[in-house]
Image 1 (cartoon, rainbow, N blue to C red):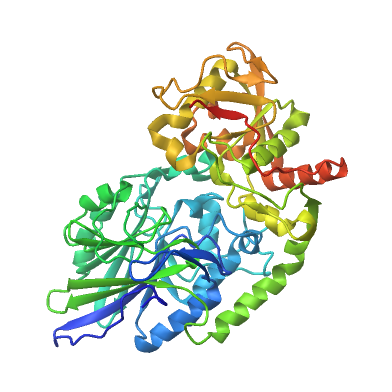
Image 2: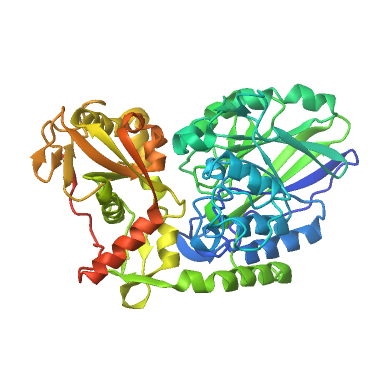
Length: 552
């Protein structure tokens, strides 16, 4: 039982008028086509313990074995299959990941916020195929042609403001064992806060439950009685990831689930990167885990006469290598991707002062990696008059690791900054900078996104006991030891994601005298590392430098 961290799989006796359908679900894969570390903390065995899990070769092996048990098994997703990916996928516009999902036999997935990272045009290209892309340096570079996703992305609550129709289909009907199953997909309503405004211009993200419920009359007319929601929105629980019928789920998805039509019995979620098998208002609400570490297996017992769900069971399967006979097709595909990417990813960039620079934030809200990346962004913006740089935590996906001799490879750098955001310079007054800093705590966003990271020479203190809107300690906001002045203009350097108001920072779009440098954040980082090594002062520290101070 511990090996699989799941309840034993059983094949019960079924009445003649009922059938069992098997679903396997995946969410937040984020282009992790190779295995990585995963901490198992199971409700059914000793833990926690760290294992290596995931990888498309292991996923392929598991699915191959399960399809021998049930050839009509349906593999479905709950978004963020791509975006925020390791370099082996992101350097090729995530086309290797789409290809892997095609080979795994994925049928359908909701979109996630990361599917929109490169904008609506690129999302539609990744769905339909072709090489006409807003990022030509990546598109169709892995292969001369790109056929697109053979599975269908769903976006019931992403509405084109011109046509007033969903950007992508709201649902897709699949059939197994004579039963029609409608999969309805949505992304979190607040996705625009996490996206480039220019990339989603003309799109409206509406209430998730409303968008889902409005599909049911049309589906019933088509003879569908079994409805499954695939929603890229999630929650958290104190229960273990494989605890059956957990009852402690909290978070935004709970409110959505409670508003759904009673006929919807199963909700597959994503976004929060936390595995769970919970009950909410007698519905089964599941999530596996990010990175392909865990797949959820769900059995639906369906009454054929009423075409309705009578029973639901679920378990979590940790994707550890060697548990299933290998799938030669997936093994060969992974080998192809590795071979194609190896030389580019292995190229040495520069030497660091330390073996690794960590993304983990201290209690003050500052991280060693944030210091390094903010300094690199500022250095790229110096020719444009840059004085202060800000960097959001969400853009930095992993620690900056090194190989022997503390050397950083191109792949390791790209793993930190996979999105290809560009550097923007703008003017903000001192009063706007203070307002910007206060916005970090609005709506509890400091908990989910953390405080922005800041560049050398800029510092401030904040009071955790002060009210929202008054967190910043008066006269603590300094530039090179001098308090900033409310009426003085300062030259600010950020990525285009923040410049367009990403993560809810409404001050950045007000910046004046904007300069779109065209410099990618990853190029800013690697150039900075090279110049620091050339100057005999390798970059990187083990601890934050104390630019942000939290009062005790």
